[in-house]
Image (cartoon, rainbow, N blue to C red; front, side, top):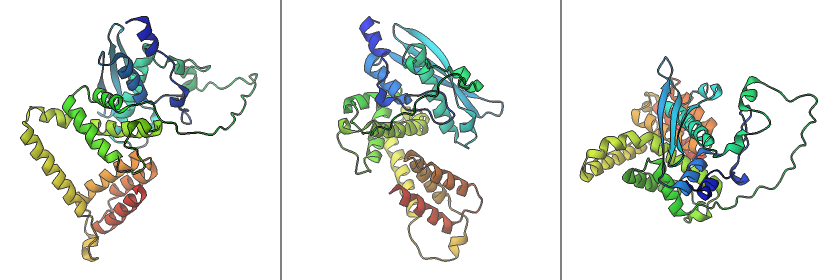
Length: 318
């Protein structure tokens, strides 16, 4: 790799994409899709990222062994993990895996010098988690002056976004195309989203990439299983899936009250609520999502109160 390319690859991230660490976490950070974007922008298809799931003795996902290979630079391996607070939040297996892989790709990139500036503060990661506190002799840090925050457009173009999705879909053209079209349609249901990707804010980009991640997590294995099918067979599968989804949603439509309301919740209602929970979490409504999960696991869900929960989530989403 020539010096100019290496310089671009390891350049400090702009301050506009650096986010403050949540309370109790170590160091400022950059969302993992920004690391992927850096790889795509600078080395294009000349990198490969893979991971293996790490499970504990109870077969629960607790981390990911991640491998990043960059042409002319070599191969590094790092373990991406999930902190104990996240593990205690009753997350799904796919949510835990996503956090672990996100941590893993950042650590791999750091070994190549990408984002290294985020790991070189006054306090090391080891000191932070060991509970080292600020010395009493050290003067207190000045309180930062509040500044007006503006949502400036990102520098992302539509072609760059498609290339990023292509990389996230492991360079599977058909899967990436389906993923991009499906999640873009879903994303633009929000009328405030511009049709021009170049007008999107960094926040818009983050939200869209999260949708792509969810799609990849849910459908990658299924898509690989269908790879040997003809296009006609796969079209039939997708059509039947759409019909089933519509029927499930229609089960939730308004119907007259009666004894049916005390009947146990139907599978269609359960599946529809689960899909709404995912949308709620995608939209930052974590508390509502947790409430709905607790409701489904309470053993008290009926056809009647399921309709109330559905209306509550749909109202919040709208």
